[in-house]
Image (tube, rainbow, N blue to C red; front, side, top):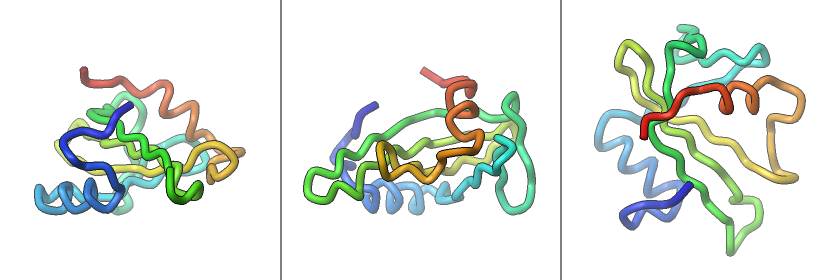
Length: 105
């Protein structure tokens, strides 16, 4: 997991996605399904195309992983997750979903 091309902050990556029309925020529900604008996507309908990890050197609360996701029908967007003690996915299916999602190399 790396930050690429000068995009070393969450806001710089979000700005880049917005310029490309890909600033859709995917929600992951407690059943481990990805949702975008009310549509549910199952594991076999989505892929992680890029991952960014932000270390939060100046603010530990910024320890975040951003997953760039592409759906089978062409939507591209992101999902954010804090990690370590700041995670907001303690008892849901988020980790299992992320582990099972195929990645585009």
